[in-house]
Amino acid sequence: MKKDPYLRIKEYSAVETGSILIAQPFWQDETWQRSVIMIIEHEEEGTVGLLLNKKTNALVRDFVVDLPVDQELMYGGPADLHYINYIHENPRFPGAHILGNGLFLGGDSEFLLKKGASFGNINFYAGFVKWYPKQLEDEILQGKWWVGNINNRQLFNTASRDLWHISLLRSGHVYGLLYPFNDPSLN
Image (cartoon, rainbow, N blue to C red; front, side, top):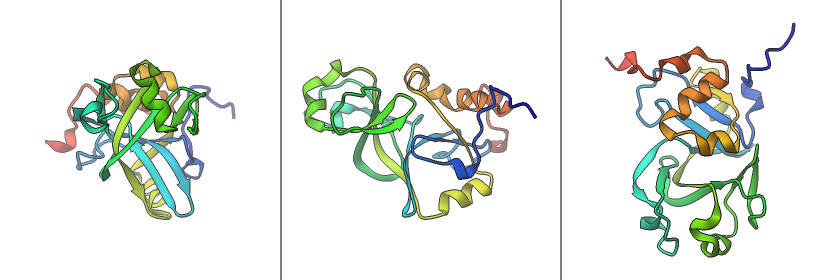
């Protein structure tokens, strides 16, 4: 059977650092509804991720006083909202962790403070999502998430409100066409 080059759906066993989770339609909980999560750590001890497409009402400079960046602070997840992570595309950022597909996590905060707004494409996230061992795999088997991938251009050039349906369409899911419509399960 010939593989479709446009279909990029991963099985749950392919969850790895740098994968994204795409929430299946019809979640009732607003936190997870139409969300896209980047896996930043996936080990036997559990999994950690960042919500990529949920905004806060704050700016980065409101939380990181030494970093005068007038950029929206994104909501990374419900765990430890005082913890700020950042995803960027600078391969020369000292201490950054490779996520793959031209994306990097964190790095030396002194380097960031020196570079400031001239740094380039970077998103900041307050909080994170955490799963206990095997919890994420169980949620995937229950049909809560689809696993896909994203690259730096897609993350930084797609508006956060569009990331869910664009990720679905790129992964071959027709549910991405639902985006302009309200979730019928909420009626």
